[in-house]
Amino acid sequence: MENVFSELKGKTVLVTGSGRGIGKSIAEHFAAVGANIVITDIDEATAATTATEIADRYKVQTLSVVSDVSDEASVDALFAKISETFATLDVLVNNAGITMDGLFIRMKTEQWKKVIDINLTGTYLCSQRASNIMRKQRSGVMINISSIVAMGNPGQANYSASKAGLLGLTRTLAKELAPMGIRVNAVTPGFIHTPMTDKIPEKRREEMVSHIPLGRMGKPEDIAKAILFLATNSLSGYITGAVLEISGGLTGL
Ligand SMILES: NC(=O)c1ccc[n+]([C@@H]2O[C@H](COP(=O)([O-])OP(=O)(O)OC[C@H]3O[C@@H](n4cnc5c(N)ncnc54)[C@H](O)[C@@H]3O)[C@@H](O)[C@H]2O)c1
Image (cartoon, protein in one colour):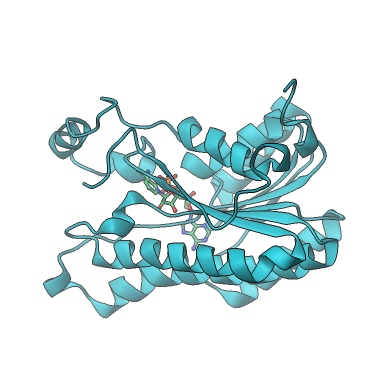
């Protein structure tokens, strides 16, 4: 089992929303084992800084692309740049996601649509383009970042629906794409310390941590390590259509 991740060296990995937070940590973990990384984010500054940081630190090739995963033309432009720069696309991590919380009875249709467009349609758009490359290679791995909130959480009807939708998409793509040599899995993180959860008031955060059996919030690297496992054929080559919960034992909020 020496250097189990050596197969990822020189591979091309696309992580959406990787300017910061969990996506950035995933990108760093792949770079640490020698993969070349496409950093893409709607935020130009964080995408560029993260891509430079990773290239300097891990001596891998990075490509930074500003793109909005919910915009079809922007996703097409992203994939055109990837094809111009790299010969293959081996791993896609659909990580870009947002919250726009509010009680259901007061939820605006705009708020509903925005979250579904980015979290669910964005994954559809990127996965479809990636599958067109991967099916020609007859190999590839996709990993979708869902959430334990897929099980339902007050104030997050839009987010919960988007994350539950990702589970159906994952299981369906796993079945459709398996004959083409493509594996598709999902992870459901619990409560992870990132700029997304920094917005939650301190008191509410403490209360949430008190329900976590392992007694702490997750760190972005807790997610990144599981993603490396799911991307490595020698470790997880027989796993597709699976949902891996990474929540310190928290099963609901
Ligand atoms: N933090 C948690 O506790 C937690 C728990 C479960 C699931 N998740 C999921 O993990 C993923 C990453 O979350 P995070 O906590 O790192 O959040 P974050 O807000 O720190 O990072 C999300 C990144 O996505 C980018 N982004 C937003 N909209 C985009 C768009 N339209 N196109 C491209 N990029 C876009 C943001 O600019 C940001 O860099 C999300 O899908 C989130 O739903 C997070």
